[in-house]
Image (cartoon, rainbow, N blue to C red; front, side, top):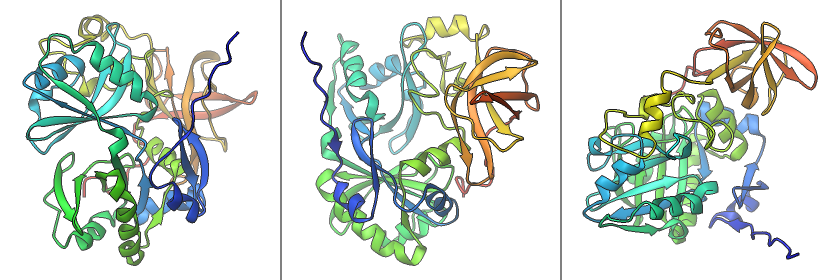
Length: 371
């Protein structure tokens, strides 16, 4: 029998910066990335209160151009691409014919093309899915992932820091909008997006320039109490906001309505992959996602069973100790239609049932996101 080849772990262009700053490196989606530099709690709180800088260069980017690009993306994604104006970003999903989720993603509308940003773990799968469904369309799909570097600057001080670097005000840039700038001669695209619930920006550049941008932001950011931030607090921050993680909270085994993502699923569109299955299932959901906040000191984790009225009704998909709330929090799927906001449930954590209750998302409600 042949031996299965192990894929080489990749490094982002900022690998050296992470090790210089004491980053504790782990394998994430095939990349060596820092789980933390100081501590998850410290980095989490710094993003909530001040500003943190994340390396997200592992994300994958595709440029989609040609006269059929809009029609193609209308077919491939659940949101309405025709609603996008130049300079706007859209959160969306791709689905399989049965309504299961291929991936969640962002679409950027440029003058002559669209940029699709997808999860690193789904890079090749998503690219193959797009190409597989491109027959009959006049378009070009270009994978620019290796040439693209990406930073996420997140926190209430992020705007003031960026304005100092750019030498201009950017408070007119709305949520889910983007613009092109020059930073010391480096071409960048800055979008007002993020994964933390705080005011924040994502900064795209050529991968060869991303190291210089990191240095500049960290240098100017000293007066704003900037800290580099790792994957650990990226996870606690997103979970406090009930932002989904593909592979944990959403997958080909969940559809958008089960995952609480019906708000991006535009069934009034003429046609898109998965529409027929979603039309049939939207009012006959087999499960639904809920947010659970613990009443006892306990940390829920993936696969922990959820009990309601002495019966197992589901399981946790993501859980953590919330640094902002000081309580265990989690999201998971339940099959019981009787579970509502305020319902008491129990989580089986290492054989002990710990009490929690269903809450309305997000868990953390004091973010600076829309400031």
